[in-house]
Image (cartoon, rainbow, N blue to C red; front, side):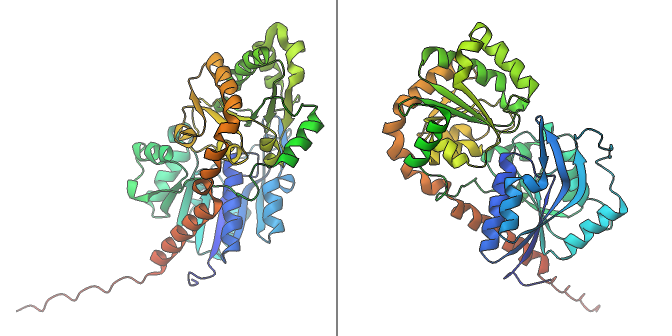
Length: 411
């Protein structure tokens, strides 16, 4: 194995599809590579269909940013959810798939698993033994199918030697689920502060493109169309807010947040009822965006209505750093992130709508508070913590075993 300087690290993804965990981890990989480590990424799936959005790996923004920076990205070529795709047992891997995984692992000193799902692959027999760090980004380990069992099996086998929790809520949930506490290390999420910042030019440009007046209050909701995000609650709040704010606009971003998602269309009609035709012109469904720094800069409020599963929602941090006031339900570490910067609400549409109005009015007064908190949410701090943990794991893996003491001579 190599020395800790110039470490070779392999990250294993379930796939490249829209989501905060993939965005965060890809940014970590980029930062670690910039710091002198050598990184590769292996993706189990090459293309997925999720939230009514077809997502080929090569079209993904994370894939593009990684490969542009010189990070080699390969795939086992599996597909998920696509019409006509052959059904593949996710617990069974072919000889060629295992051989490709073995080749990728052979060149690595340390392996990072993006969430616990890739452990179904890494736990297969015959693969090279490398220390594995699992990066955990949720607070509901019991709600992840077989993933928790795979994590426990990998720990018992000695493959997994550490877990990164992006939030205290993740650490507490996994400890309660039976993961040894000494393996759980909290590294809070951080973002690129040069990218995510208030920007008057971007704010004006996007508002002009969408036909939104400069003075109009704007709420942004950045989430994929998923049950945990509680989209129906968000839409009921949007209906109540747009009725009381005749100049207000709502932006919805993420996979499935388009007219192509039939579930979203039904949810909008259920939430808006007779007001659908009158109010929904101010409800902008933008889908997946690669310029979220612009979307957040154009907003006054960043909203989160999730019911479960969240740990440290990236949308709240990115939105805050762009000057939007966060309003969130109390899930995961959301309350701790929002404290002093925004508003925490119960899962009630009217309460959420009221908080959005209060947040929009408070935006100017909270600008200084948000600016002072930037260092706390720094990408630099986060990446340094990842680097230190990877260095430590590698050092412990190559440390020679202490020689056994000789047995005393018999008298």
